[in-house]
Image (cartoon, rainbow, N blue to C red; front, side, top):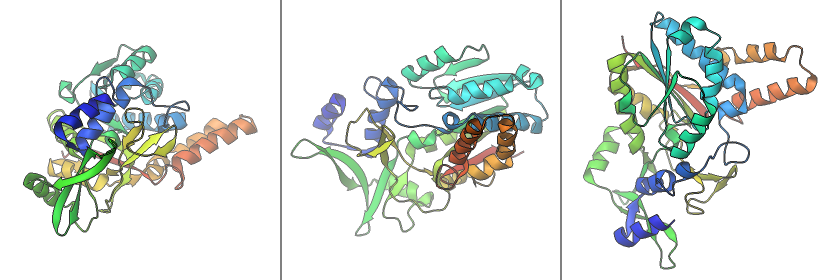
Length: 346
């Protein structure tokens, strides 16, 4: 990527979060800014693309939450990073079956990728849907924010300890003009932050999700002001395990971080314990983090699959339950993916 080469010529080395930001979100060359990475012909598949049942459960959960709020006359649902619009399109279909809820509904999509926004606007033809560029554009509520595989794609810093010294991971170029990792002594402010967040306990590699934290602070402020909550589903961990989770994916296979920059996805596992702590510290009530399998089963996904399979052919039934297994089984998405819900304390 020419932009990266030019920056490294000038700066010699850049921190990992800056590298990820350029690789994924550079306006001209960034991975998410120039291509549609979703689906069989792309690089990965998300839960709404695995089975419609996933979106059905999310939609029913949203309606149940609106009921829990005693049916306010207006509710704003904000999807963070709507991707190829799979989830949004499917939940709208379910919402339309519930007139009272649908009449109260506004939907906002936060999408920074012009390419993906264009795809979304072609697919979604509904006057209730509006697009926003910044989370600060949310001006009313109650608001329910949905984040499905959103936080895993945000830039992070990596820090590790060597001889009792904190070092931050940087990217530089070798003598052969190839990208490689290097390190610099971590700044005092950064060290203070990771200690305050209890990220530094006996870890080889500490991941500091710098952009996720910025989003969470803004989200907490919005929820406190307008009421509502945040429902986030992502792959990650809930115990204080940490370690190096940086990974790259292309064509549904893991690839090396520095291979084909701008054409491969770069992600990390989400630290749900940290998200929970930050939201709690910012005066939100955070419910217990559960696995995706537990969450979807409590909503009745298995019972719904049985209902849908009635009067289907054997082949059609097999497809329904094969897709259900991908969502629920521990060897697929069932336990790797976690679910967290946070809401206004009162």
